[in-house]
Image (cartoon, rainbow, N blue to C red; front, side, top):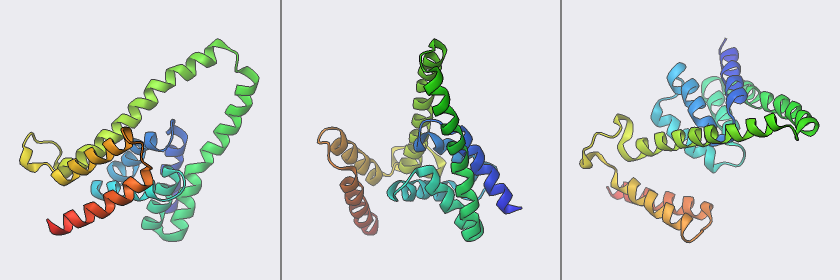
Length: 187
């Protein structure tokens, strides 16, 4: 039964996560945290971090991690299959349709209409992670003393290094991990 639940949950995520891995985060959170309770919100944030750091698509990495956590290797296989199967089918059909009908005005309009929705999904996932990182599971309370200033400083430094100095994100992640580890140990 758990294999069927894992497969069905990640099949839905694979079918409806348009716009890449970060756009899939609200869908994964809904299935894994809210609906089934397989992970807590804190564990889900850790899942995102681990999935971002490991090679491969974030949704596939998340599916594999959750499947392993819930039902071992079999769960990982079933979850991963459920996650990428819709993509394979949908991309194959869309590629055929796009090659055949790419000059139609309706198709161009449909693609233009999807862009803002994808941006909204990514922004929603980012804001959820930001609130959890800065204020924990209780969320923003308006009290500055509940803010994790180390997280805010690491976020600001990482954003500055990425946007202004165009540093390699891998080095920023590694540096943030080391600095965060030291700061939280000393705290």
